[in-house]
Image (cartoon, rainbow, N blue to C red; front, side, top):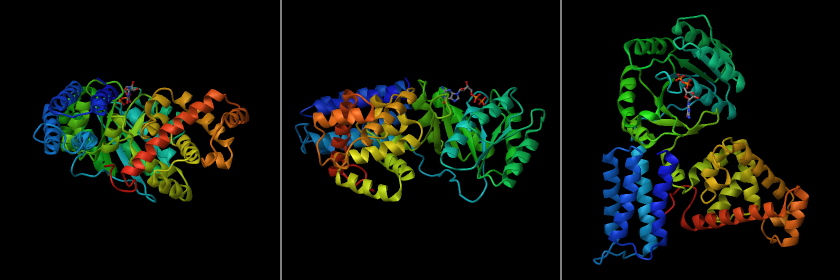
Length: 449
Ligand code: GDP
């Protein structure tokens, strides 16, 4: 089962709560069984599944009266169940200690990527470089993989595609020497992030560990990132432990989470080693790398949106002035077409649209399905043309968009009336959600109640 399916299944089970007028023991049992079986089929360790089930049961039982019914109303219990499920799944994926290395401006941050052959290490080096280049860092790629024939050409070609400076020697066979030369070269040129791709092997073996240690001792990276293929599921635990023991792994990137039945197992197993997962690979394109933050990930997986992730994204992309207004409005539960336009404008600069849209509660996957980035980007652009054709009052939602105004907007933006109506429908959904969230919580800090 791929992770999206897992999310859908748990989401569907939770949705049953919305339809229920009474939440009794029987319904609770039914929902928990569905959630547990979805987690087990995604290869999540049974220990976590039992813990989640018990924790939800305990929380809810405390809310029930002696008739086995909710004493505090269905809505309260529903929220409690949803929150406990999110909290338990988040705790499962979040190591209590060990923070990942944070890149520092004004210095050369050296990162070494290690992993077995075929794990997706070389692809991940490129995705990783691309991620930081888009954020404005000066990034250089070093190919110190001398073991796999073709690794040099592959990284060189990838680097050219993303326009990232590259260092490597096709004929050099000593990985330590190339790694050292490459790091020194980029340091001298004042690069800020230097990514070193190292050799893999088909399996864990002494020669691999020895080589990794030598490279690490020579280039003294600020952090080593272990790249691991999710297809081995719970076996990730042993692999991560073995790498950890040999070369002080700072964090982990789990790849191929787009198509694997064992994704849930891989994630929970890595978290159990107390190694922080920093990114996940979700496809073969250079854009398919998602920063990993447990709570946001779980909320998006369950289709609940990820407001703190969205806030962070917005903060990175919008001017402080606009940011302040938007956050104030969101906190008040206010959302105008103007806010939607500002968000879409910034979203266009942020890359993987499906990721960003997934953070927005209520909008989710239907707007920009994964794999349809191009269509998604075009659609957002057309939304922007439409909003650019609106008057200030229309954007501020003080003048309703009547039929004749809609026709004018369509004509002015070179779009169709149906498209403008679709935009307004999406806006209404979004606005409703923001107004609900605004009432429920203080978005600046507290978690939604
Ligand atoms: P390396 O031997 O560890 O350097 O592995 P490569 O980077 O050459 O990747 C091996 C294969 O996995 C390639 O076909 C990649 O396109 C593919 N790959 C890497 N990351 C992902 C991912 O996140 N999702 C999918 N579906 N494929 C991936």
